[in-house]
Length: 172
Image (cartoon, rainbow, N blue to C red):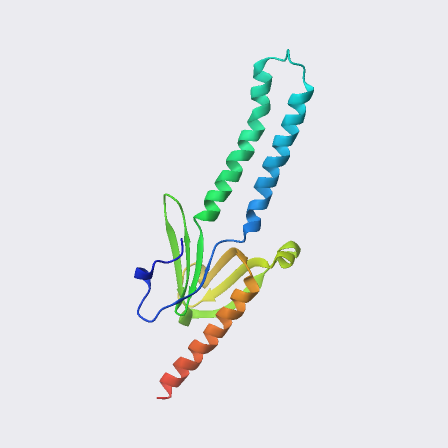
């Protein structure tokens, strides 16, 4: 999804264009496979004379698991996390779109939150505190892959932005 070039300002370039970590799809897909395998085993073990409605009832957990996996996949494909040299942008939604944008110059601090497994998979939540935005100026970008790389990249952009604004203030 990302950001179309027509939405970039003059001199603005995309540095990171990412989706959530693909590992978020593991749980629903694994659940679907386990449920489908369990239902197949049960169907193979029940007698042929079993009424049809038993098979239909056994199919319900498979359908629920399938819808969950499809819903997670749709959510995953409709999410975009973009860092440009001027802003951080999050876009979500299939039918109803939502977009959150934080200018780099407004970012006051960055932090990362990772569970044990997220650390192993190099994923996590990037927390951005900014001046003058809603929700007490805090934005959490969840399930970001290579979150530490994104953190360090944003930190260097902040340093660069701070140096540029310092040079402009001193007349350099």
